[in-house]
Image 1 (cartoon, rainbow over the protein chains, first blue to last red):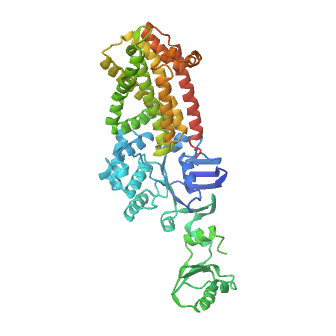
Image 2: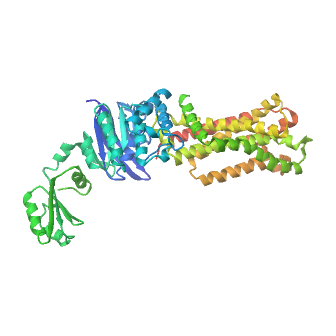
Image 3: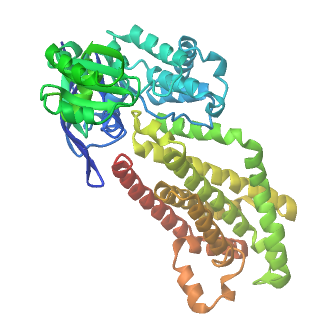
Length: 308
Length: 251
């Protein structure tokens, strides 16, 4: 399949702090790619570089085969970008905001107006078209920002944490729209929500401190855990920390931590679980939960010192 | 030019939302300057080279009010879109060059300055009941319009880099006081120490003010200072445009 986005050794520093370090990856046309990472991992910076908002210090980036610095107008005209914050112009109405964005991407005023009305229907904010953004709820503002990223029918859609802080209805509207676009557009979004990442992406990258810790299809990433299981033992009262000291004799019990009334750990061998249970039963146990590793567990392992 | 007009259109929409306040400013600024500054000074300086002071000061009022409007609009708009409402982000991620954005903003500030210039002409002519003949108007405009352009560029340049709105208030006040009272706009330079007056006359923008007054006295004036001011304005715009293009996307 043809590449839609290609990054080669992208690096960015700000005030001597490395924000992005030598990042390389590719996204195929018409696929959805997600970058997960905590605050400050460099997700927004990466998207801003691709959107043309920021310059990079090193490396090359291509959108549909065109280098974003040497052919900026061509790449920006086929890219739609939604930033993490609501950045609408408060001095204009929602409709004027959308028309302006369309015109800045080369649309005629008439086409931009038609598209603005279309997206306002799709995303259910048509009743607010003549309102200024400050009177809109956060959810509606984000829907407008989302519509603004789509108004010029871009080939590549870059979304920076599109659903963070949103109510269920707004979240559902955005994901439903993205579902309709999947396969037709290249979608690259960032998130801190692991279930959204698992649900909507074809490929996932885990970004931590400006470096990719892992890139691949979700199943392939999970495969790397080789059957690692996540155990949670819930106690009636907060368990004593002595339990952790006792567990030190079992090196195959991975990353045991006490979190509230829970004792969490990972292991590949069921036998290890019974060893832990024997120790745990010295205190009053309320519940036991087990699950195979998911993206969130993988992320914790990769960014917190590993699961082996 | 299409994108420059889109930037201007955005400014026009924002301006339209505060139309009443903006219209008041257009009308009141020259009237206030006439009543609160020119009238009291008329008591102290009844004439300048045998010309009635209120007639002599007229181009000073036009020039100060028009440059003030252009400077303020140029400064406020870029500072606001860069540091306050994130509108610059929309431009930066669009297929539009920063040159076009800056051109649109400067052009908008220049247009506002021109509108203020014509509003001041109408208001002062109405109050003084003096009509200035067309050929003199053209000569005066050759001195004043370059200053309006320079003011728009100067405002845009400062607003591109200085975030603080408090600083904007201070710098605008200082420049306004200097141009009104310390550069021959309202008080003839002959009233200042010779060395100070000579230094000021060597500055093209101040020379434009002096020449505008001299047109009122002698009905003649060369456009040299106006052209120099225009060139300085263009150079400033080019430097600021180059810096903006390089640095706006840095962080």
